[in-house]
Amino acid sequence: MRSLAFSISLLLASTSLTSAADISAASRIDAVTVFPSGANVTREANAVLSAGDHVVLLDDLPLGVRANSLRVEGRSDAGVEIGSLDVKVMYVGADNSAPRKLIEEQIEKLGDDRRVLDGLIETADAQKRLITNLAELPMRPVKGDSSALMGGADWGNIFNVIGAKMSEAQAVIIETRLKQRALDKNIIELKKKLAETASKQERRTRLAIRVRSKGAGAANFTIKYQINRASWSPLYEARLKTDEGGGVSDLKLIRRARITQSSGENWDGVKLSLSTTRPTQGTSAPVLHPVRVVLVPKPRPSPKKTVYLESRDEAEGIADSSAAMKPQAAPAVGGILSGRRMKMRTRQARVIQAPFQAIYEIAGAQSIPSEGDSKQVQIDELDMKSELVARAVPSHQAKAYLYGKMKLEAGISVLGGRVALFRDGTFVGNGHLPLLTGGEKHELGFGADDGIRIKFSVLSKKRSETGFINTSNNDERKYKTTLNNLHKFPIKIEIMERIPVSGHEDIVIKPLNGATKPSRINIDDKSGIQAWDINLKPGKAREILFGYSLSWPKDRKIREVPGAPRPYR
Image (tube, rainbow, N blue to C red; front, side):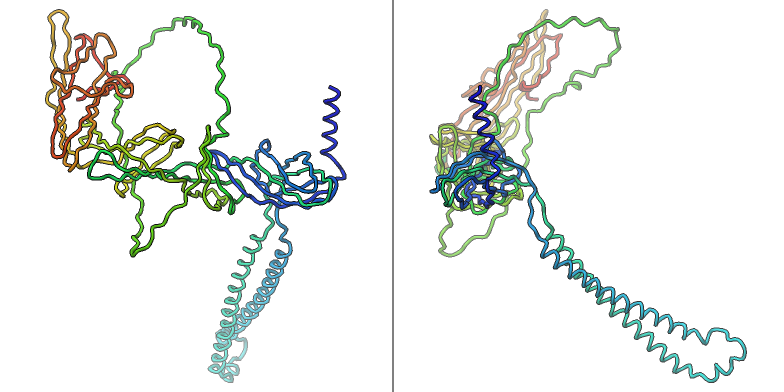
């Protein structure tokens, strides 16, 4: 314990040297690795050190630095040792006192000029009042004999002079007010500049690096830290190119990334990488604790109350399993280049596939301002073969949709995200890609296939009672689906349907005799979901008979429960 206390005291003494010289250094961002949430930033800083102890101060780190993520490395030929790192939040701002003083003097001078113009307007107003009084003089009553005054004055000339002087005074007022308006505009503009040159104090992170140098020389520091207000999310384009042969087609998956950051620092010309690691989502699995099951005490009897119940159907409702599709607007398409111009190529990212993560090194220097606006960059393009299949659920919609089934190559991982779907160069809508790893299969829908005609018919709906003693209700449903392939090539079609699943031993559900046998049942471990896989040649038609019978006790009613398939009506 004494040795531990002695070591701590030495560490504290070394980090509080009073003789240390402070050296301010500027740093620049060299590289950024962005995670789905957060980012790792690498800065470079240089300083010239003399022999002795120093504190290298960096005041240009953003406010949101995670203090426990700060790491400092260095290179120097002067024998420099890094001691401790001190992190402090402080206010910083530029000193703009000199330009502000100049603008303030200009505003003051314009204000003096305006006050001079105010004096001219006051003088002209006084002249107008005097002239108005002279003009009213003949109308005023005069004491005594006024004949001499009225007879000896040339009022015609007097009124002309009065009119001229009144016009001169009014012209002076108008001209002076126009000058004032121009001065006011200049004053407003200068005040805007004054506000822009105000010392903008902002909170920043100060990093103090305590070092000891054996000799004089230059030192280069590499500072690494993590920030929160940055993220990237994947964007995809899936471009399906079909051919006349059907079956297998080319599929190109273009991987892009949308990057946003509002960390308080601008990333100008940095080496940008994207990582699939999620450092903010925990590092270990949940810990389980024992759980005991105990009996709940019996409730005390309460007085009876009259309760009015709604009908069961109204109280619980019936969930509709069909989802309405919302059409997406197609993006605007640019013009077409003419002539023999070479097609532009997009630079691809360098993909580093580690055992537990993927890193995408974006080509070229990238700049992302700290304003929260998104920036899109391209990662790469994946070319693969896709198996085509048309899928339909006739009982819900008499239309087939084209799907492309793909398989990722080993060593490739795909994060979940939105995908824009193109079929033969035409935008058909948006879909979603889940999280996929190498070797996994997935399928994407590429819109309606108008080359396949589907007709769905209800052949019969019957309800009856059977038995003499133990009577029961019986329902029978029978449907027919007709398929026509209008393509010039054969195509694989999957017809999906479902039958209800019994939830009680007294409820018996059976497929109808003579119905077309499904190719697959209980698809994706969903009871009652069936599929018919059909390879339909061009110009050919095919019929599928489908139905079921359902029986239950006469004195009971049946209803659907959430999650269970509902009978067709």
